[in-house]
Image (tube, rainbow, N blue to C red):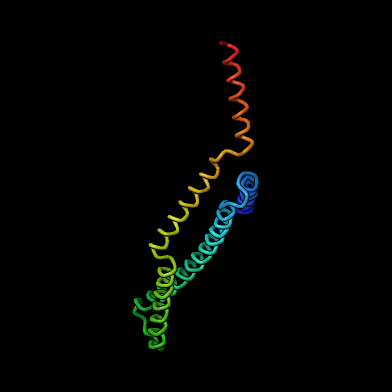
Length: 154
């Protein structure tokens, strides 16, 4: 299913490139295409990073929960200093992963990315709305036909 989505994106990029070549060569259209490619790559990197952070966070949370359960069970441990150190170490690692995640994707960064994405989508829509040379010729021909029909009726 992911392969189909990738194929769809590549087909969309190919169509956009053809449209840009045909309608507005040497324009900001190519910049838009490169920005879209960068955006896709950044989205992929973001998903990979978030996945890694989530798995680390889940693993560390399980460790902390297990150690907390052992601590709360009231059992006497021969090596309680090592146990407490392990618990503290796991808790610290969990907090550090959470901090890294918050630093990597602070809310302001996400808002900035969302703003940029909206701007890119808006540019893409504007590019799609510009009629091609072939469409303009068809419009001109149709208007000429309609004008001729009106003149014949009068």
